[in-house]
Length: 111
Image (cartoon, rainbow, N blue to C red):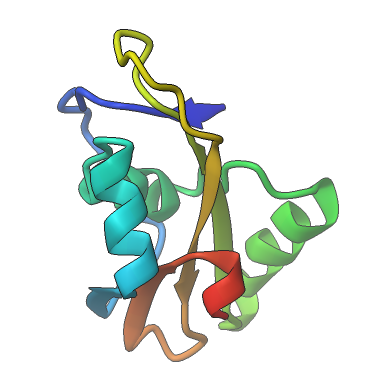
C-alpha cells in the first residue's frame, strides 16, 4: 500500500505508546516532497498496520507488542496522481524503541 495525501481523519486504536515523536532531515524532506502528512503514517503504525514489511517482520512486531521489543513499520511514499513530475517512490520507516520512549520516522539509509 502506498501513501499520498490528502489525509482523511480516521479513528485510531492505539496498540502501544509512541513516546516522543521525531523525524530525520531525510524523512522530513521526503514527506514534504510527496505531500504526506506524517500523522497519517504515525496513525497506521500506532494501530498495528505495519505497512510494507515482510511477514516475518510483521510477526516480530506482533511478538514485540507482547514482549516489549522494538517496533518497525515501512511505508512506501508515492507522488499524488495529479502531480506533473513523478519522482521515484521512497520508503519511510517508523521505529518505536523497545522502552516506548521515542518513535522516529526515518529513511532506511539514515538508520
